[in-house]
Image (tube, rainbow over all chains, first blue to last red; front, side, top):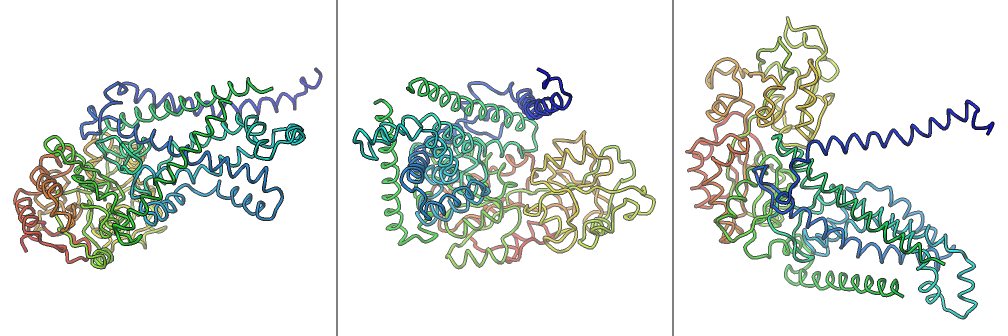
Amino acid sequence: MSARRRPSERLFRLVCLAATAGPLGVLAWLVGDTLVDGIDRLSWSFLASYPSRHAEQAGILPAVAGSLWLIVTTALIALPIGVGAALFLEEYGGRSRLARIIEINIANLAGVPSVLYGLLGLGIFVRTLGLGRSVIAGAATLALLVLPIVILASREALRTVPDGLREASYALGATTFQTLRHVVLPMALPGILTGAILAISRAIGETAPLIVVGALSYVTFVPDALDAPFTALPIQIYNWVSRPQEAFLKNAAAGIIVLLATMLVLNAAAVLLRHRLDARKP
Amino acid sequence: MKIHARSHTTFLALAVVLAGCGSKHKAAAEAGGGPSAKGAGAPAEAAEGTVTVDGSSTVFPITEAVAEEFQKTSKHRVTIGVSGTGGGFKKFCQGEVAVTGASRPIKPSEVELCRKNGVEYVELPVAYDGLAVLVHPKNDWVEAMTVEELKKLWAPEAQGTITKWSQIRAGWPDKEIHLFGPGVDSGTYDYFTKAVVGKEHASRGDYTSSEDDNVLVQGISTDPLALGFMGFAYYVENKDKLKLVPIDDGNDANGAGPIAPSAETVSNGTYQPLSRPIFIYVSKKAAGRPEVGSFVDFYLANAAKLAAEVGYIPLPDKAYTLAKKRFADKVTGSIFGGKGSKVGVSIEALLAG
């Protein structure tokens, strides 16, 4: 009790409170400002229409569809590869020199500016592999971008699985594969999902790499295959923000609300899933 | 056990995705004869009945409007990317897109790239864009400026030395001047420097720049000591927040004294030197495809009306007639001789010549 009354203690508590409240306040202000600007434009027709030069008739259907295609494809590519890499590094790679080199590189990759991934994607997926400006080229690029996040989070999750459980599994005669599959992975899955949430939240808001890879700004159809041309929400928003007419700025705000809502829904789904899995833990 | 089933599905899906990549790669390589630049463009171009457009963000609103109307009457599809004028030419000259928008004429390096890849192009002006010089509405000393004064202010030598209004014209207040302008990657910046300083891409660096003209509007409208330039359309949408500066080019042959930009003065060529034509370039080979041909015909027939609707200034009717003829005859090459912008020439004279 006496410690809490000390002035330095109270001061530190205040500093911490400010550190929490400050960013939250700014966030609330930004979201509030966007809501005020864009809420009027939100309607079913805004979600279900194609872009138009008439701001009031313009909609974000191709952008929403493009973003969903991208996110799902990105997750399908990044999660298995990312979890696989984490398993190798944590469970198989051990302390070999190769593992350490890979480790350092992954940590570095997490800090590379996203536009560079765009250039890499343009070189590899669009040009060399000849995938063109397609959903798959965009998703593969985003997958590269989020891989470090997935790998780092998955490794952390694998580390939280107590060694005793692994040893118990081995003691019963299980192979490494069986141990990973029946013991380690199920235990680590909630943590891995957290990484997936972070990765997807990052990918859905990316603009620069997609522009470099060749996402379009005006499409009047919904992608129907992995090799279809596409646009994405951040690109549509960016496009509207730079228009001189006030009405387009409102559209941009409405687009931001949709983007935030999509992100919240995706995150909420992943959080729910994680809770359900957590509850099943022994 | 549920979890295991799920992870199996995931791996299966990945396998399908990767297999898809592999086979696509093979197909593209066979079609294009290897992973060359042309082969890479194949998937995007291969779709029957799709007109692929890329290029300048300045031209984008017009192309978007044209595409919207075109698709109401046609079964063909139009896709538009925005890679900027330079980025658009890069894709266009590698045969990746059929049409590219440009806020300046093609440059020698781009002419060379197109030639190397055997891409011939038809250059078609579609509208005018005026560049407006703007100050804060409370600025009561600037009534007009000459091109000489603008040059003195924006030239590279002015950096760090011309910092006060009184240094530009005697009698103006002895207060700091705050400059705003578009980023150095934009066609707008290129044209302004060419028209005012005399050399493309040469200006002082100590000004507030933004790729987003709305940020410039914000900056100038909240700073009483500001001066900046941007596309005319942004002034039209923010008339109450900005004050327009009429410009005197010192040449009485195209209208005496200072002239303010307006639909009329830009279109009749008296607002000089800060008005410029903007273009689309059409690949001659792609123009042979029915969807591209009919799209470009539609573009030229409706550009005047649609350009005005989205905030640009239409060319004189005669210029559209000449452009249509140019496209019908598939006249290739640049009317600017492939040397980039020319300042102060009428687009009709160039097309007719």
